[in-house]
Every structure is written in C-alpha cells, then in structure tokens.
Image (cartoon, rainbow, N blue to C red; front, side, top):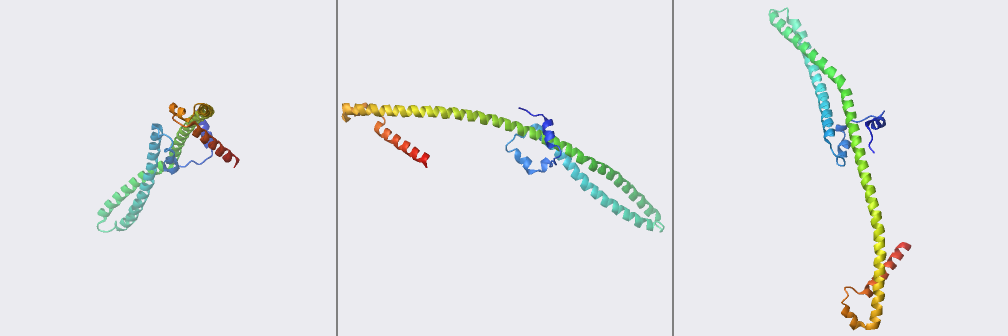
Length: 220
C-alpha cells in the first residue's frame, strides 16, 4: 500500500536531516534502490545550491579582503593629496572609492544570497529525502510481496516433495517385495532376464540406512 509524502513528512518532524548528497549513507542506498530521474533531478538541484553557497562564501571573503586593502590604500592616498601630485592621488582615490562601492554592492548581493540559501537548501534537501523515502518504501513493499510469494511457493513445493518422497518410498518397497518374491520363485538366473536398471535389494538397503541415519540425527 502506497504512502503519501504527508506521512513521511510527519515522521521527519523535529529530526535534523543531513544534506543528503554529502552523506555517503544516502549514496549507498542506490546499490539497492533505483536512482530514478526524479531523484537525479532534485539531487542536481541540491548540488547546484550547495555549489552556489560555497562560491558565495568564498568570493565574499575574497571581496572583504580586497575592500580592506582598498580602504588601507585610501588612507595612504588621503595623506598624499596635499602633495604636488595631488591630482594624481585624487584620481587614484576616486578609483579606489569606486572599487570600494563595487565591493559593497557585491557583498550585499552575496550576503543576501548567503542568508537565503540555507532555507532553500533545506527545502530541496527535504524534498529529496521525501522522494528517497517513498522510493525505498515502495521497494520494500515490492520485495516483501515477492518474499511472500516465494514463501508460498516453497511451502507448496515442500508439501509436494513430501508427497513425492512418500510415493517414491512406497514404490521402492513394492519393487523390493516384488523382486524378492520373483527371485524366490524363478531364481537368480531368470531374474537377470528382466534387465533391471537398479538393484531393488541395494535400494532397499540404502533406504534403510538413510532412515537409520535420520533417526540418529533427530535424536542427537
């Protein structure tokens, strides 16, 4: 019986879900469960968000370092503006201030992205978890149905095997009795004319030994 995502979402309520595509246990699931196109699409979406988050964190740190360098240089340039090359330094100051403004704009963009990405990653990660749970549940259900079917088949085969074993034993006993009577009546030379493919006496002896061994095993 299929379950909807609501049941799985309720089961996850209050639990911390690892970022699945970074979790080796999640990847190991797909040695047993099909990696469906739906799972692959959401996996790629999650990986792209993680990549964006890593890029935003790295580049924002680089921009912070660049901004600090520019501000330090602005302080130095400010000290030189009163010199005879003041126009040169004023031009450099203006360019540095423009670059600082660019840094601020980029930082604001990255900071907003960094603030929003965790919620988006969590949302997509939860979706991937729900899809994974549904696929695993359905696989478990299919496997269980097949196991039940195989169990029923084995039970029937065991019943049939038991019947056949009893029937085989009856036929071997009948052959032994028939052979014994015929042997006593016609003699060994005549019995050779029947060209038997197996020796009923030998079969009977082996059967008796097998039953004795079985009794010893069951008693021990």
